[in-house]
Amino acid sequence: MALTASTEPIDFNPASSDFVRDPYSTLLALQRDDPAHWSPRLKAWILTRYEDVRNCLSSSDMSVDRIRPFYESLPDNERSVLAELMRYLTLWLVFRDPPEHTRLRQLMSRAFTVRAVQALKPGITELCEELSDALPRGEEFDFVDRFAMQLPGLVIMNLLGVPRENMQRLKSCSDRMQLFIGSARNAPDKYERAAEGAHEMAEFFRALIAERRREPRDDLISAFIAAREADEEMTEDELVAACMLVMFGGHETTTNLLAGGLSKFIANPAAWRTLAEDPSLSRQAVEECLRLDGPSGSMARVVAREHILHGKSLRPDDRVFAMINAANQDPDVFDEPQRFDIQRKPNRHLTFGFGPHFCMGAALARLEAEIAFAHLAQKFPDIGITPQGVEWHATIIMRGPRVLPIIIR
Ligand code: HEM
Image (cartoon, rainbow, N blue to C red):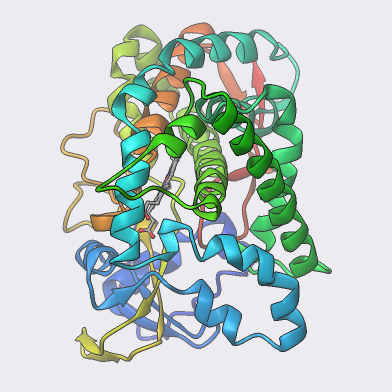
């Protein structure tokens, strides 16, 4: 995309259909002309350069504790609807600063180990076989619904030790919680529905935790219960919250990686053929699917300490969106940033974040996508797309197709 300098103010309107389809014309113009942009619509700073996004994600000038101030600003009636949801969200480590973050992250890391992720490999391969065998040939279907949403959901349930028949129920809980956490969608009764989703999911995990206390198994819930660090363990609410975070945080993100990645391969058939011929390239190819128009749109922060950035003063309590997707296309860091290059090296994208909150599930998401793309490219070397049919999620937090109609020829 050629960008020419312009004196027109850049209209950052993430709700517009043009932005949802192509956020990058605006984001890359901001990156060049107004890297610390104040958005009156979002009442927030929009950061788009790689260096600034990376600093914002890891700096102690910024706080991740953004849900609580928002909750406290709501009227009494809405606060009481959301009270139970907040009981768990305030225990999610993504929303906690040190020292609570450090303690919880240490405890969760004791359970969420490389070994636990690697042990899932044979199960992921089997699930890929099973799901891809069931895909129709020669007729259009939605890849999100039939594959990209199924695989991560089933894998996380295997990891946690949740029986498979609960998939739809937990997905519905996540979707309802998303109405509060993930987007500005104006759904009717959105807070009531988010609260119901959280209640149902919390009660589900509370019961499962009680079962695992009685009879531990080789799963993440049992490992969370057993995790100890300097004589500390997780409280009952922290355990419930940790299960909810893993279920919620690891599902839709990976779905977006699989569906967004496949859409990129379909637009670049030579790359798909290269992968089909040499599936060992899959690991590196996944990094490019993560980088270019990958699943992380932005991460939100709140300014904790006043500081100056590009001549602008960022004041305590100001909200900030660190636009990861824009940073991943910063020409100061990536050569030909808009080119989809499955052998790109180095590829230091920020899609899993940076610093103390770096994604705990990165190894799992990478493993799933690596196995899935290698498997699909070999099995279905000829996949087509109906471009008009692709619908993108309308939120700046995450990025990916909501619907991806494809045809396997
Ligand atoms: C492609 C898929 C994924 C993407 C793009 C992604 C992205 C991210 C990002 C950007 C963060 C940092 C948040 C911040 O700085 O505020 C994060 C944190 C986290 N992610 Fe992921 N994630 C993915 C998959 C997963 C999976 C599969 C799991 C679990 C099974 C998971 C669990 C977590 C947890 C627990 C945190 C919180 C870490 C902390 O705050 O210390 N993620 N993720």
